[in-house]
Length: 292
Image (cartoon, rainbow, N blue to C red; front, side, top):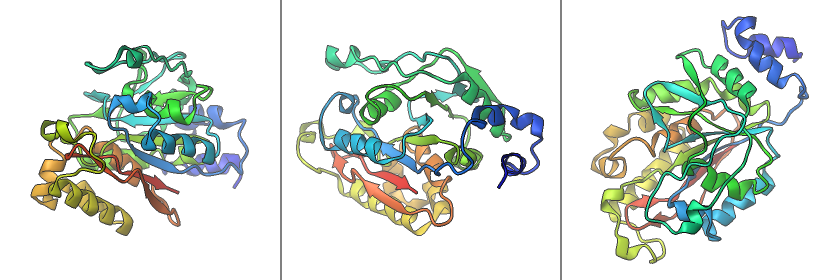
């Protein structure tokens, strides 16, 4: 498909004027660019950002195996906003949005560049809502703890798209679908959260016990994986109907909604695989998904 034809068909009904930022950002790219996969990553404790463990080693492995992206766009559980925003600064700051951890973790700086041009292009692709260009946020620990393992040289632009906490699950699934063209133009899209995430029930005395999970957490993790594998995304959108285990697994939606951005971007013939598929501390799972 010629570039002009591709631009006209990106999002049905969109005008060429609205697509101009996207065209500008992608004009130097080949028409044969490889479609990148989409990742949902269970990021877990901020300490995974500096530790060499089985989870971080898998993130490092993906960084070497996936074709090098032109940019990374992360939907992090830790950027909740009223309305939708995208980071649009040249040099996003490293946000240490946690407490009670060693100073070594607070000392980390991940100096990846941003991309105001890609931010503008992405905001124009999303037609279901206004997307504000944000100059104040940066990269929170849902982003940098993962991406610094994947791309330790910080030589790839990194952006974040916020989660509008006032909107339901269907809204986020539908919004994510509008990002699909980015996959074909060099952008690695990552949802960063945890499928099962109930901090109020963590068994702190079991954190060092390998693969310790409460029965309901293991049950719900298996249900999530089954729904993802079978393509039953409607059940994942209507997660409240999945029973009492779902209510325990998702007491709040912040860590769950990034998964919806992942599954919404599955296309025909995309393979699905799971990694870091383990419970932690009873009430958390690190289970992650690669699509494509």
